[in-house]
Structure formats: structure tokens, C-alpha cells
Length: 529
Image (cartoon, rainbow, N blue to C red; front, side, top):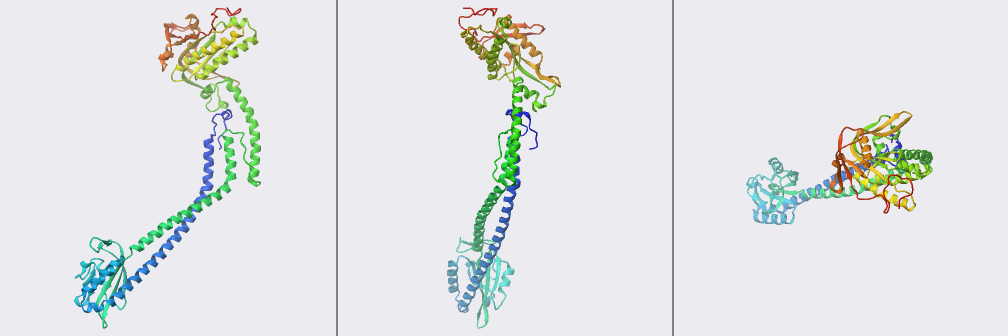
């Protein structure tokens, strides 16, 4: 926003402070306030949600683990008492059948092991069946097994980790290696004597699933709350920053050249007062720049914009004497034939009218084909074409001939004499720049190519051609077959030039003289009938 406005912004071109740059600064300001408020709110909501969800999950997990322990303890106590008599009677098949029934109905039961002390602690009934006859199963660590087999009046409860997958029935995996299991060991007694140990393992997988479900629900709910919180923060931030951003946008629009813009006054507080003061300043600036705009527009009628883009890329206020740039360009010269005789037979006012009408037609044809007029030399026109190819320069010459025909038709209707012209075109290197001194600067194009183009225009009378172009122009054509080119001289020589060049006539097959009128050497007297 601190960039200085150039005068070119007043004329409608992009200024030193572009609209895009101004809006980028505006977005930075938005981020510095709105984003910080939203980020702060989001962080606060996230911290609260994470804390609450964490405490909730921990509480629910402890509660479910406690229930699983109670379930395992109750089962172990009930079954150890119910199966003591069966164990005394060595009715192991009955115990095994009951074990299978219980485990089948309870998917959380991973394993049940019943060992007989009278047989050295060998397992006599088990689910899975493969552990019948074992002393120490490979389901859990040996140290966990030793701890659970220690005699105690109370049940022994521990959370252990499986060392292998547990399948029962065959092919059905009840638990995987690494799963956590609550194991309860309960002594089986008869007449006060321990006769066996019942071990029950219940999976905690459902606890993990329930915990995952809690986490998923908490995440979804948390995101909803977070979005609502961010939306609320955004609405609050908009109410706070809206007036400030509106004033900043107004300043950006003015910096980009929209001097007619005014800041809306939406409040009666300090910001409203600032907006009114801003608008008063805008009124003064608009009046000042309106005068400057008129001055610049008038200046550009003397110096073409394309010329200014070369000699004053930083704005016309920065034009310096000697600023220059070498370019390869196509130069067109056009001159009225018999102008001296015509001017002697006309008043100054008539000549001004003639020239203005004539130059308007010629200038339009040149501009429509991408050229720009560098200067007027009396009745002569010097135009430049800054294209890679030379096609549009020839197109301009042909268009000038067509417009001249229409111009002469209108003159004939008024009983005025027709006008004929000669056009010469050359392409070459020239220098565009400024000459003069600190109090008087002028733009100009100099170079041998300019002089040769002027000489070629003068040769149109000698070769009785309307449009002459040099070999350099022909070589620069992109679509040569579009034009009727006729070689008139293989080694033409211009006045004051030692070098020769090829010279071509462009036959447009269009007469600029109305039907019934014939060209004549002198422009004096009435038009021939």
C-alpha cells in the first residue's frame, strides 16, 4: 500500500499499486485478525474436547474392565463349586460337556482349564480340548500360570496376554495372539482340601471395540462442536473486522485507480468518523486526478501509448532525455500527391478540414491493423508496426487505399477534387527514444531504416506505383501468397544511398479515384468530367 501511484493509473492502465496487490494486502489483514480468532477458538474447543473425551474413555474402560472381572470371578466361583463333586467322582466327560455348553453360549470366553491336584496338576477338562492332559498350557506366560496355580483362599485375578491364537471349535478363532484376557483362577475344594484349580479366560476385545466406538462417536461429535465453534468465532470476527476491512477495501480501490469509490459509513462510532474523513479526502483526490487525467489524455494524443511503453515504462512523469531502445520495426510512410498545388488553390481553413478528415481515415486504417502513428510531417504520415511479421503493415496500406476511395467519393459528391497518395514501406532496425533538453523533450524514431522508408515512398511517383515495399518487407511476410507482389526493380537505389535493394509494388487492383474521374498532375481547377 506504500507504493506510489503513477500517472498511468489515471489513464486507465495498471498502476504501480495493482488491484491484485491491494487485495492481497487486504487478505493478509483478514488473516491476522479473523484467522487468529478462529484458530484460538478451535484450539480451545479442541483442548476441552480432548480432555473430556480422554476422561470419558478412561472412565468407561475402567467400568467395563471391572464388569468383566466381576463376570469372570462370578463364573469361576460358581463353576468351581458346582463341579467339585464331579471332579471327586472323576466324571470328567460330564465336566467337559458342560464346559463346551458354557463356552459355546458365551463368545467372550476364550478358554476354561480345570486341573486335578490328585494327578499332579494335570488338566483333565478344557476348552479348547487340546490342552487336556497338559500341566502348563502355552496360552499365557509360564510365570502367569505359576501365579494362578498358587493356593489361596480367594480367587486370583490377572490381566494376561495371549501367546497364540485360540481356535474353538476347529477353524473358529476366538482370540488372537497379543489379545488381552482377564483370567480368574479359583480353587476347587472338598472337605476343606484343594482338589483342583479352575482357570477362566475372558477376552477384553469387546472393551476395545466399545472404546473404539466411543472414540469414533466422540470424534464426530467433537468435529461438529469444533465446526460450530469456528463458525461462531468467524461470525464474531466478521462483526469486529467488517468495518475496518470495508475501509481498507476502499483505500485499495483508490490505490488501484478507482477514484470514484467511496467508503460506506455504517456506524456512528470512531470507525464511522474515519470513513467520513476518508471520503472527504477521496473527493479532493478525485478532483485533482480528474484534472491530471485530462492533461495525460491530451499528452497521449501527441505521443502514442505504444511509444510511451518503450520510452517511459515507469510512467510519463519519469520520462528522461536520451531514453531509448533499439528495435526492429516496420516503417510506413504515406504522402499526398500534388499537395502543394492543392494547398495553393485552397484557403488555410479548407486545408485544415481536408487534412483532419484525411488523417482520420488513414489513422483509423493504421490502428485497425496494429500500427501506430509516430508523427505527422505536414500532409505526410509516418507509422510504425512493432510486429514479428510485416503482413499487417501491408494490410494497413491496402486498407488506407480503400478508405481513401470512400473519402474521395464523399469529396466528389461535394464537387471537391480527389486525393491520391503514395505509400512506401521498409523494415529494419531503428532507435525509439527522446531528444531535447530539460525544458523541451520530444519523441522520435531515427535510423537508416526510417530514412529508407521515406525514400521508398518518394519512389512511388518514379515507378508509377501506389504502394512500394522493399525486399526486407517481403522477406518478413508470414503469408506471402495473400498479396499481389510485383518486382519492379532488382537493384533499386534511393536518393543519397549507395546500397541497392529489391523493390516490389503491391497491386491492390483498387483505384482511389471515383468512376469517371482520371488522375491528373495538377490539383488546380475543377475535377475533370
